[in-house]
Amino acid sequence: MRFEIQGLGWVTPGGIGHSRSGAAFEFASGTLPRLRSKMFLDAVHPRYGRFDLYAKAGFGAVAMALRSAGLEQWKQKRPIGLVVGTQRGCFENDVAYFQTAATEGGALASPNLFAYTLPTSMLGEASIQFGLTGPSFVVDSTEPGLLDGIRTALDVLRWGLCETTVAGWCDVNSALLPGDPGDPCGAVFAVLSRSAEKTAWQWDGSQLMNQDASVTDIRQLVQAVLENGTAGDRV
Amino acid sequence: MSVVHIADIGAVTALGVGADALWEALLAGRSGLAPVQRFATDSYACNKAGCVAALDAEHPVSRVDALLEMLFDGAESIPPSTALLTASTKGGIDQLERAVRQKETPLDRVLGHQIAELLAQRLGLRGPLRNVNAACASAAVALALAAARIKQGEVDSVLVCGLDLVSEFVFSGFSALKALSPDVCRPFDANREGLTLGEGAAYVLLMSDDALRRTERDSLGHLVGWGIASDAHHVTAPSRTGEGLVLAVRQALTGAGLTAADLAAVSAHGTGSNYNDAMELTAFGQLFDRVPPAHSVKGATGHTMGACGTIETIVGLYSLKHQCVPPTVGLREPEDRARGCISPEAQAISGEYLLTTNSGFGGVNAALVLRGGSSS
Image (cartoon, rainbow over all chains, first blue to last red; front, side, top):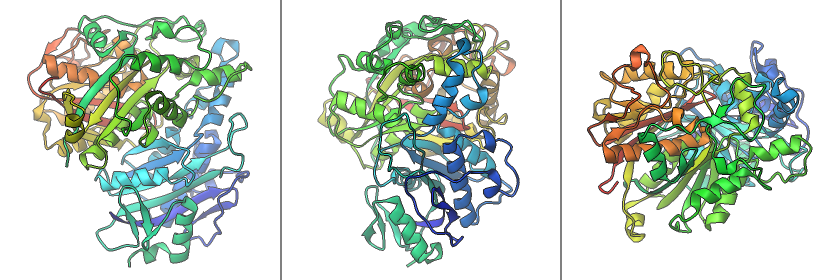
């Protein structure tokens, strides 16, 4: 299947940006900047302050990706999918929630925290904000290239479940969990569309290719777009 | 394009171990909902859930381990090249509870991929593996992804295993959201007051024609259509218009080359929550000229979250085989729009296709269309 990358967005320790913003991209371990909804939206989002860090980063990167694709504004809901790969998801928020439930026999359990104890809540918030009605789900993965969300989303396109999808990787570190402290922290999303034209990007169900070269890491994918531009997808 | 066969099934729920036990209990109108033993419920909105009694004792690793042992104990072996999709919302959440309470505990069952890796190791599977999380539509979404892959001829067999536990974590959360019924849930009842949680695990092994022949298995039925769509409405409540569910069902019917009139029955999500059941009835009203016999298992099993898609697919196969849908346990007085299609009694059906639907937090909806097998 040939496909286009219409836009890219990211929220990483290196900063916030999208593929048309001119911002430098760096996806590594570290601490995310303090995130506020006005960084991504024209108006304050009423619930953004309640989101856990995973949801804040993911929501922000989806917003940036849609902005770079020119799909941020909408009047009618659109059949665009949302797929994310993650390793830890909302684990940190799970811990924070259960700390409220584990005392006083659960009488102080926080409904606001509980609402974000699913990694899909971030996708739900993004779908509401941007009117996205396509398939939406999370893929739990430890794949080192961080491409599982994008690969699965490309399958969704290939199988005809939708024509466009926003997909990527979102993860935040947790002090409680064993793992590599060098794991990248933050979110990167791409807007992907099936294409009938001959584009640089191909997916055959196992290999992700750009200009006939294999792409095995999400950082490679971003660099290819930043170097060649989304407008240069067609070859 | 390959036909997608259902080659094997298994289930553990509050109604017992095995798919036969599940069906027989449902058909008899039995309920597995009972007072929770494994944690104190004094502060919560209710004290009942659909627990698997054998899991009440604390497990040294996680109750997930015991649940999977019960599920696959005695199961026919699965080809090692089979791909694996687990579907769980919270996996071994009992480990996280212990960690927060400062007890010495491993944390190797708390992430979705850990559950997939555990099961692959347990079954000796060497194919690709993932956990899919789509809230309470997780297993239905995983079945859709698995079926699409087989239909395209990309893999020969995929094992889809849904599972989730009744935990204080989830129980307290739904209680805080005021989503729990004060007594047992009453799906589609005029006086329903909320959902009742349940736990369980169920697997559905999907195979291509070739794989079915090669492994000399009988086809129990077919997965012929699937759809996934979002409401884009609210993070914890379904759309009042049912638009996401309508989209998912239409996608599933189109993929199957069917119309709503071809469906003999519906296995609804039917949680017993006011908003969910109203949303489903609204969606069904848009999809059907006359809603066929429909039912919900939640009053018997409880809402098993990530597992319900595989559990309800199994029940759907039995419904097609026996040409009846089981009673909707807990239902006393159907709400107006449920009259004539949802009943506290078993209902005869006539036809070869059944629709099963699930919806979840984040506004995700999934629909599957099943066809009965010659030997199902």
